[in-house]
Image (cartoon, rainbow, N blue to C red):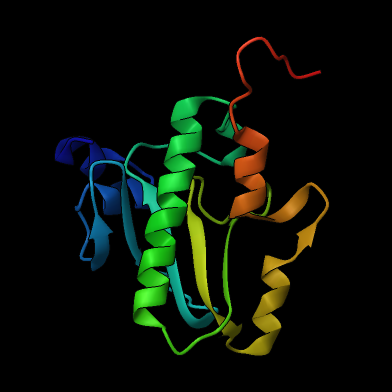
Length: 152
């Protein structure tokens, strides 16, 4: 994403991905950037976002490029959170689904648990097809089907 486009974007995450804010980036590559959540809900709480604007998990499809992107986001998140919170024994990775997402730019929440304070876990409950979806579950939903097999 060009810096000029990021500056003009009303999306705060596009601005962060375009490096047009003062947000400290924990990781950056051609596909994603990662940074600390401004309202952490756990011992460590990072967000991994795609550089390109994708509004929500509902915009992902069973395409190799979407599957590859989410896999990469999860890999980056796991690496960062385990590096920065090795003392934690429980981690969690997932996405809010509309209408529960706070920013309309795909973002992976990466947690080193426990939640702080404990009641913050409520915001990250999985309730059927709404609420919070675990990253591994999302990957199962968007995994490309082998050639010749159609989704019924």
